[in-house]
Image 1: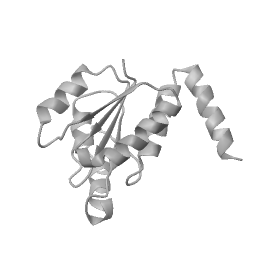
Image 2: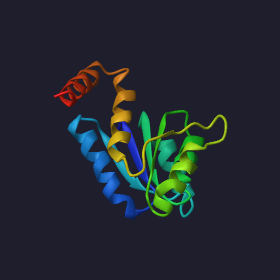
Image 3: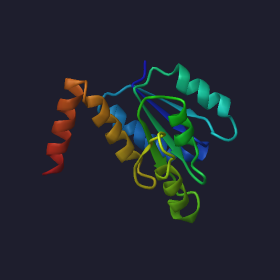
Image 4: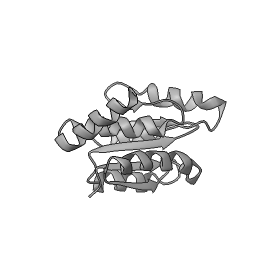
Length: 145
């Protein structure tokens, strides 16, 4: 049972997926990673979201960056979008994720910033997990050193 489902729109996003997985692993958060394009295989995206036990979704996408919005349209759980620098310095992806229509929110982190997406997911999970909250407090304390 994963706490976080990481969806990437393309195999080419693997470097960012690896960063997300590394942070989640370091905190002991269970996750699953899948490649599913909002445009090329929308049925797979819908199935993954509907069948997932995850409490948080991280959707990684470039170009039109539709994946985070599509995921958000299929769930009531938090969705974090990671824009990828696939063209235009990633600005197109960032704006696509940040400018969602009313009532379909997606949190967005910086371009290619999978690490922040993982930390935000951990912060969301830590609201109801005291052990994870303590790990996060210790992590933030180490940042001050």
